[in-house]
Length: 173
Image (cartoon, rainbow, N blue to C red):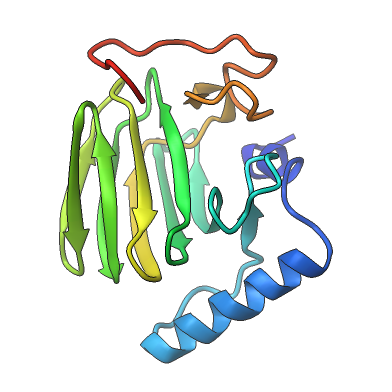
């Protein structure tokens, strides 16, 4: 099973997924942005709180052997990609549209259109939409088991089953 299939194992389904996708597609159209014709991944991280904890991802590439990954990440207003860290994955985020409140290590700050943030392992990070926002993630490959969520109730990643790992240099994630 590839990494995208593993992530799809906890993807939202049903009418809420369809509503989220309609809203996402309307916003992308309003921004006049062309995205690849790929099926988005709609995540509530298994928590059932999509409006507050979730995001929509469009995986452009996840080339494990070649060593790179590219994804579009979309959050709605007030929606958060939950705090997590990686042991190995190095990421760079580029804000294409909108604004986000980024939490990185023990800092909190806002990023807007055109801003870039590089996230190095094993530093904890999360982001919240301040209005709708679209980010481009360029990174090392996405390996599901290299995601360690601060909320051990998230049934995905290296801490699945409640074995949460505390990253170094963080007082809270």
